[in-house]
Amino acid sequence: MKYIKWFFLCVVCFLTAACEKVLIEDDLETDPMTVFETLWNFTNEHYTFFDIKKEAFGLDWDEVYTRYRSRVNSASNQLQLFDILAEMLNELKDGHSNLFADFKTSFYNIELKYPTNFDFDLVRRNYLVDGDVPTYNTIGGYSWAILEEDIGYVRFSSFGQSTYQIDYIISEFLAKEVKGMILDVRGNGGGFSSGPAYLMGRFIKEKTAVGYTLVKTGSGPDDWSEPLNTFVEPLGLNFDKPVMLLTNRGCYSATSHFVEYMRHLPNVTTIGDWTGGGGGTPGNWELPNGWSFRISADAFHGITGWNIEEGSPPDIEVADDETTQDIDEIIERAILELQ
Amino acid sequence: MCNKIKRVFIVLSLCCIYINAQAQEQEKIDEEDVVALDVLKKNQLDLELGFGMTLFNSKDNAISPNLYHGLGLGSQFKFIWLRPNSKNYFRGRFQYANLKIDQYFLASATAYKGDFDVIHLRKFNFIPLDKWRFYLGVNLNFSGHYRSYPHLRNNSDGYEISSSLGLAIAFDRTFTLWKRKFGISYIGTSPLVNYAIRPAYTPLGYPAGFLEDGVFNERDEGLAEALLKSGEFGSLNNLIRLDSELALTFHFNKNKNSIRLIYAWEYYNYKSIKESSLVNKSILFALVTAL
Image (tube, rainbow over all chains, first blue to last red; front, side):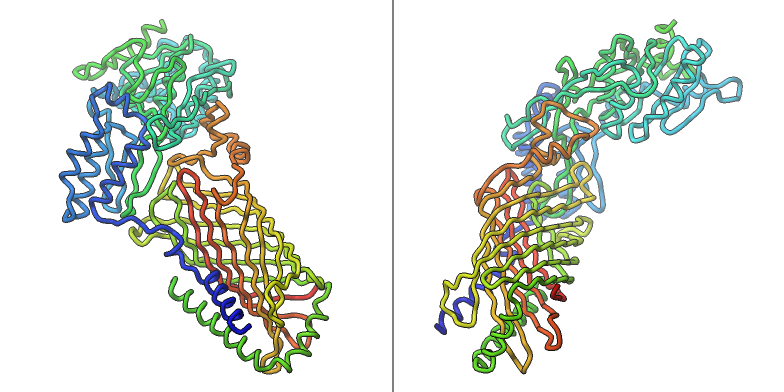
């Protein structure tokens, strides 16, 4: 009887004192090789654009492993390791790939490879001014004016800003009976993923399918969700006159989504350069040493199945001539189209 | 901090063992009091309100390969309905903690956890110890554990939500020591079948239902509905959970109230594509009053 009691107490002690070290798997080592392997493996299993990157510029992620693994050794210090890992991530040429540490953040900026095709200061000084008096207004992320040709001009600088103020602008355009609208999203690097649908809602009269998203659902190369359709519903004041949507390589992420949504509408013409891409929602994860990183974790395709990661083409490709200091060739072409 | 909790536990355990040994020597004195307490507790409804510290250890492989841990606050309420041959508990437990990892000072998380348990126990003396009362029964548990990782912007949420039906065991005894009435009690529960919800996959953390309804809502509307239908029925294959509560009770001589020192320990492991594990330990100080 006595032994039963003590046995019983021991069982209770075990049940109550069990330590997490036994029950939860150990953390990975924090040495440079393990950190490198973890980043490469996670990207290998979760990144969503290997196919399109291979097609675009011949990315071979296995070859990347071989090339960078030889540069990492146990003696690599934090700065060296960060730079190697950041360089490896930049092989993806994806603006949604970043490595974050307390002393540095890595990024890849796709627009640096291409002509700017946009200078808002030039636009302000030459199109939105009467003498020395500005003719444009600003609210939130918008700057807008009615040009001499009775055309409404709206620049939207970031989808990190609210979109609803477009209703005030549309109401003024409609009251002044403009011929059409130039919607300038050049240099808009994106922001909230909900913004494109809210803004596009002003340019449609019925619920519209704009594309679909595939989400990675497992570590295997074929582990994808079913295509998830995206619909946009009418919202706010409607503008159904012709719209010239100005684009460049600085249109990234949410703005690339917006351009892809809009460019198939019958009253919308895209003018300028390709968009920059950024068709995947970036997801974050941690490395064994605590640094975090993010990579694209889903893939948006337009209504025609176009994968926007490498950008969407404009209907009318126009390059801005940087030698002309007072003319924006892309705006000029838009005005011409609207007249 | 883990070591401190361990030390406290060891002291508590030694106290229990010591008290138990002392109680053996006072069996004759105890007998009258035990009988008195038993009489007192027949058909009795008690309310227990406890508050204390919790040590969290959480590893969510959908978010990070690292163990997040930290000290937080815990509270618990419990209605205890004592009948001659059964015990019934309705227990709510809430915990909150700020978590961090050892490897990197900028990584942090906030954890919230809530549990509701309905436990029905029948007296069942399967171990022949005179002074101890043993119980076997069932446990209905509703549990939610949410973690926010603010430095991970696009998938900063980790969560598990589950409801389960499982087994419960309990035992207790009362004794007198230094002319004071004490009690030791233990309740342990473990689910057998469950309906559990966890993000479909890393790194975006959408509920599985969100990825199956054919519509991708950029505005993240309808996530709650998708969340609720994302659960999966399972057994020990997908959710292992052990919940253990050891309490030392001191009964006031002058009235039916008592105070209670509780050591609660919980472990669970949810095996989804990326598994999540939790161990937390709490020390609670509770007041118990008869209703």
